[in-house]
Length: 371
Image (cartoon, rainbow, N blue to C red):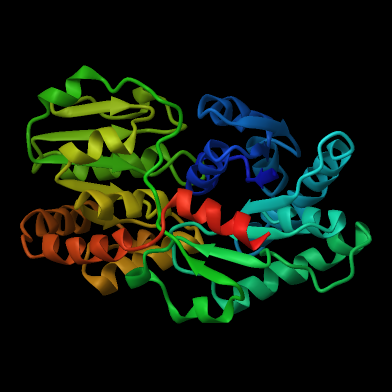
């Protein structure tokens, strides 16, 4: 079977669906991942065949730069990203035509491509709570004209006929009940291409605080990272900060602060006593899988705010409002989490619920059986 996997050109979008793509490949299927050119080397490094389509993340973000904060998350992923992406993919289907299209939750060209080709489609969610009904309606409305331009009758679809929900059930909201074709699946910790972890990880002085705001420039701003690091370094034995798109030189220099551009979560989380992050879905689930305390500081994305709300409601971490963030608030919240022993039992309960779900290999078999 030929399977096309589509993803917005950003690591945080690709990582949730990567384990399924790899599982389909292990099962002997011909899998190709379509994405922007800047993510191609990363996907290839994970052992997957790639197809260049659409614009790069940098080009897409620049095209959305003049939009209002309310418009940007709608237009960026629909009217800006989808037309060029779908055009490029469809142009290549003369020589390679998929039998199934799987899109990750934030890439909306996949269902359109499947509709044009007349093949089944599935959507693999992020491990975050489902988008609210009104947000999904706004995305579909923005895509209606795009679908018509490709000769497809409306209303537009943002998800496939099957929806693979990898949000841990305790974090999920009732919004999931309004999505058709849902199958709950287990989220997997995925780090990207294999890499050798730095040897200094063996020499960290506890308590270890890991700080990351992801890999997207819009969220991983140097000033935000500096504020967090300066706020917690006095209470930490070691602060490890992953700067993502920002240079290491943008961080403060202190004896107990280690700075790196990117670090596999599987390498740092077994060493970490506390993670401070933007609430990215993969980072949040990784904290749950490793039993790590988590302080969520959303950086503006709706999915981050949904995740922050769920984490706080379950008591498996704390969430702060990024609109009124200061050093004293950060210091107090971090100290409270480090001193809370009871939180570990609540994290473990969520991890148990995750373990009972079908993993990528079972999910791959499920999709094949559907066809």
